[in-house]
Each structure stands twice: as structure tokens, then as C-alpha cells.
Length: 68
Image 1 (cartoon, rainbow, N blue to C red):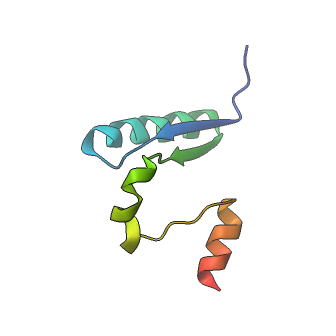
Image 2: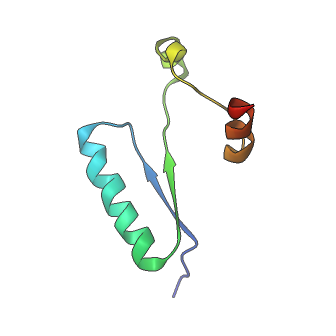
């Protein structure tokens, strides 16, 4: 049997992906593993995101850079 270490759920923040994230959260809680949310988008969409905080790199580093 495979041992789970984490669950990855892809989301685009649409109503349809809400169900995916919810189910992934249930599975992560049931199996006591981490949940990672993945948002992927076409680089051509980057201009739309100018008002949105985006960071590239390990989450702790990106979050600390924003807080600083």
C-alpha cells in the first residue's frame, strides 16, 4: 500500500474547483497529511494579475518577504 505524504489540489478559484479543494481537504484531514493548493495559469494572463500579490519560490520565503 502506498503511504500518502501530501495531497495536491489544483484550483482556478472557480465554483467548480471549490468542490475539488473541499474534497482534497477532507482527504488530507482523514489521512493526516498536508494539503497543497496549486494555481497554474498561462503566462499570457500575467498582465491581469498586476493588482494581485504573487510570489515565486518557497512559500515561507515568499511570505516573509511580503511581511518584511
